[in-house]
Length: 487
Image 1 (spheres, one colour):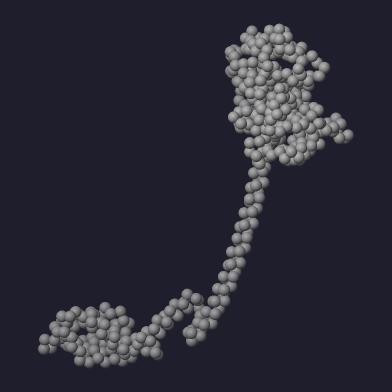
Image 2 (tube, helix red, strand yellow; image 1 turned 90 degrees about the horizontal axis):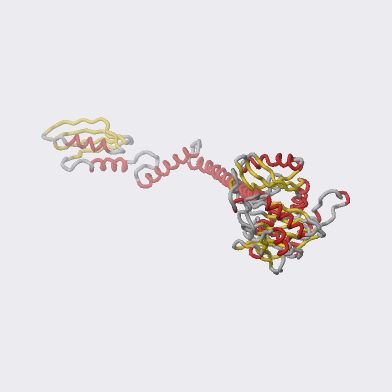
């Protein structure tokens, strides 16, 4: 999706207007525009507002024109909602949001449960806040949302037309009253309280107060504007905050000099091109298209909204898309881990099957190799096989006899290894060595005291154990008799 393009929709009584726009360097650029006539409601709903066919037509035009955008915002005509300035005893925004429906229910004589309410704080006093409140039937707002959702055009916000118009000309009318008039509706925008001196006990809030009302084509627009402008200036009392009125006229019926003479104020033409640019620029652009662009502009960057959806049917488009993505990702991960688990389980069964087969063959071969041996467990069988292998190696090297008893060569080898370990200062004379299957007997002599070192060498050898021994000192030598056994 195009991340910097948005679709703004303005739902008027007789037509629905839509614009494709982007916002660059604070200026709105309208890239495409079209309108769809309002479809009559079905015969079964003659008394109710119906938007299903209109939403379907909008989606069809978007498809036909191949419009690409990231989000949708909606503005509704002033004839579809009621506006009232209320006083709230709270100054905290969250507290106002929690109570404004009940304040509107009393002031506008509506059923809070059946009404979608939007508001903005336009001023603060010591006793609370001045709040501009907008109320629309819940059924109407619900019909718009559901119809657009069905056609994959779920709106992020639904706002009053006056708020959307003010958003476009917000910077163009600083410290001046703004008046915009068409054949069917009129908007009066007062400067924010911060633009002039503070009233007693009131904080500057910085919100321009906006009024909107329906007019007829036959109504005298000069008289209408003169009356409304005078009423607006009268609201400021003696502390008149502005002497300038900027007019945006699409009817061609307003004479600026005559209006200035009737109101005693300076009348200027509002140059809306400073805030919004249409692809094919005309001298006077339709107010309906400007409102649609103002609705879409709420999606570009951080913008305060006066949204009918916020507490009625909060927008969950991106949240729902995120939840859907997470669900899909979760299912994919689940399938992946299940596949990995099945693969590893199959590998385990295969390895276990091979292990059992090798174990059975090992038992069979062990019984054959170790004739008469009993297989108990694998670790014990491995130890016995290693011992048998070492014994066979000793037999092949001559250290052991083939029968398994120690050979004479082995016994003599161990004896000579022990004799080599006797210190060289010991003079040993061996007279006789007798070897049996179990022991060796040695008769000999050493120089004085040498027999002790000989006995010590025998004791240190790992394969020999000294048995009975005797010695006798004679003619300066120690005669000894020694019996040796294998370890």
